[in-house]
Length: 102
Image 1 (cartoon, rainbow, N blue to C red):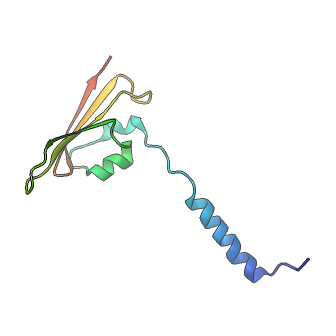
Image 2 (tube, helix red, strand yellow):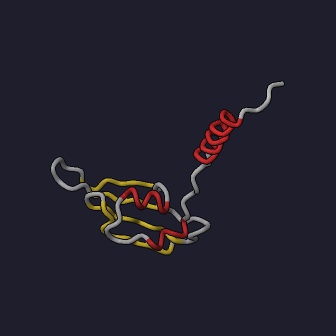
Image 3 (cartoon, rainbow, N blue to C red):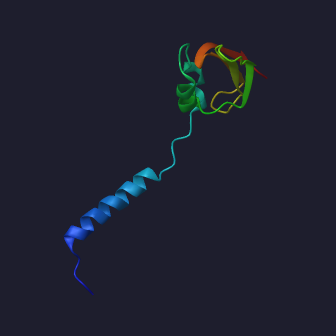
């Protein structure tokens, strides 16, 4: 058996640590954060904060005009009995509506 060479062991250990840190799954979005969505937030920011919507509807998509759409989030154990509808205008939150849903 050959002796361990520190010069080759150090880069190998660093590479293994890097791979271990990048392969971890990202944290799941928290449904309890839905109440903190505010006007002016971008679509990407909303997805990072609370995840992808359960339903998406496009209300207006005309070439040269700002797109209007809404995302709906159904009740979730971390946000029970609340239906959250987020309306976007040109990729930014224009309105947030939270309704009690039973």
